[in-house]
Amino acid sequence: MKTYDIPTEQWAQVVEAPGGPAVYKKIPVPSPGPDEVLINVKYSGVCHTDLHAMKGDWPIPTKIPLVGGHEGAGIVVKKGSLVADDIKLGDAAGIKWLNGSCLSCSFCQQSDEPLCQSALLSGYTVDGSFQQYAIAKAAHIARIPEGVDLEEVAPVLCAGITVYKGLKESGVRPGQWVAVVGAGGGLGSMAVQYAKAMGVHVIGIDGGSEKGESVKKLGGSAYVDFMASKDLVEEVKAATPDGLGPHAVLLLAVSEKPFQQATEYVRSRGAVVCIGLPAGAYLKAPVFDTVLRMITIKGSYVGNRQDTAEALDFFQRGLIKVPYKTVGLSQLGEVYQMMEESKIVGRYVVDTSK
Image (tube, rainbow, N blue to C red; front, side, top):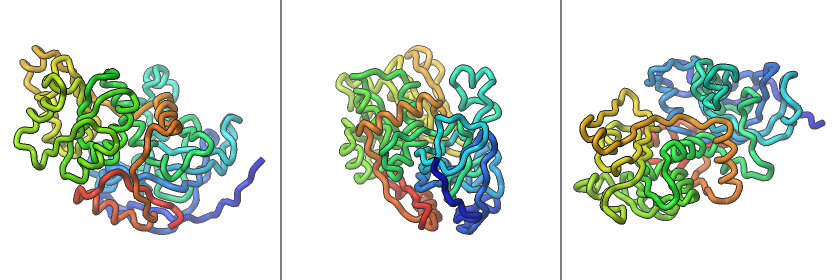
C-alpha cells in the first residue's frame, strides 16, 4: 500500500472576513473523518461562484474563515476508516461543489443529492480546493480516470458537469438548436463543446469579437454579440434555419438582463434553463406568451454522481477540450479582479504549488 508524507502546514487562500479579500497564507493541513478522504490538490479551476463566496453577496451564508474553490483535481493521500476499498491511496480524485450529502433523504434516494437539505458545499459551507490539501466526503468525490491530465480536467469538475447537466435538463435533442448565453466564459466554452458532442447546434451569445472567435473555434454554429447587436432577439431567431429560434436556452450569464430576454427568442415549446446566479436578480416572463407558446422555464443546479461520471467520460474520450490558463495559487486575487472586469475568456486554473 502506498504511503504519503503529509505536512502539518500548507499554503492556502483564506477569506478571513465577509467581502474579502482572500489572503495567501499558511494554515494547518486537515485530517479526514471516518467517511472522508484527504486529497492533495494539484490544480483547482476558478469559478465565478468563488467570487460570490468571497464577496458574500448570495443569500446563503458562507463559512468564515473560508478556503474557497470547488474544482480541485488531485491525489488521495489519506482516507478514513469507513471509506470503501474501491478508493485507494494514489487514486486521482476531484473535489466538486457538492462536497457531501446525507445519502438517505428523499432527494438523495432519487439521485437528486444536490438538493439535499444537509448538503455540504465546497468552498462555501466547508473549506474547498484553494489549498494544497483538502477534505471531501468519499461518497461524493469525482473518480477521475487514470491517465487524465489533472490540470486540464479541473474545470470539468464544476463548469463541465454543470453545463452537461443543464443540457440534459433542457431536453434538447440531436439536430436541434440551443442558445448558450455567456458562451465565451468558463462554463459557456464547455457548454458549446458538450452540445456539439451531443449532436446539438449551438448559437453562442456573449460580448466581444474575441469571445466570438472562441465560440466558433469550439464548434459553435453561430455567434451573436450583444455588445454590437441592434436587435438581439431577432438575430438569435435568424440564426436558426427556419427563423423560429432555438429549441432551448442555457443561461450562464452573470447579469439580469439576459434572463429577461430568453423567453422572447426561444421557440414555442422551447425550454429556458437558468444556471447562472447573478446576485439579487429576478426572472420575469409574460404569462400570456409563456402559456400560448408552451414555454418551459426551469432551474438547473450541479450534477449528481452519475452526471459527474458521464461528463468525465466525454472528457476522457477527447470530446471536450478545456480552454484554460494556469497561474499560481498566490495569484488568485488577480484572477478575481479580471472576473470583476469581465476580461476572462475560458477558464483560469490555479497551481497550488506556486
